[in-house]
Length: 185
Image (cartoon, rainbow, N blue to C red):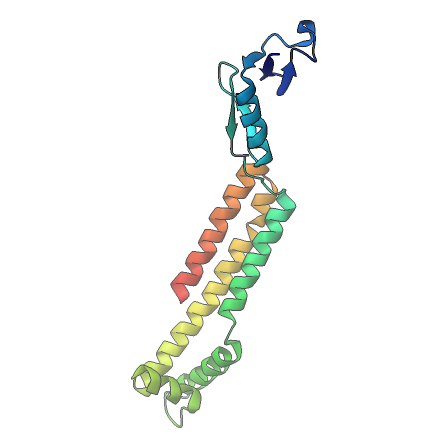
């Protein structure tokens, strides 16, 4: 008995089961041991490929690429997680920023309130520089939200692509989202 592998048909042929006329012309004979190795490799989730000579070998399967709708859903979910991270102290940020704006608008006079004094105490700053830093951080946070929104809208660029190209662009966009978060943290 001789076992053959056809790269063109991606299959095995056994001389005891297949007449020679049914074995494709590109089929290469392989040993019984090699045939078993290849079958065992398939059971271990490997795929059988053939080299330029048509000789079969085992390889890891190509990565599965999700469809574009799934890639876009993942991008939206990723952006939502980034928003959640930035918003984790939303009430605190909003109240501190409102207090800082009111204090600045009052010419940095009067009672600054606990939002500013607690920040000033924690950072070791005087009241006015603490107020200015709060406002600067508030503006940076608002800018980060705008950047995330702009990046999330790039999903429409991804939707115009397919396969690996869509996946690669989505990876670039989510990496840019990570950079926005890194810059604000």
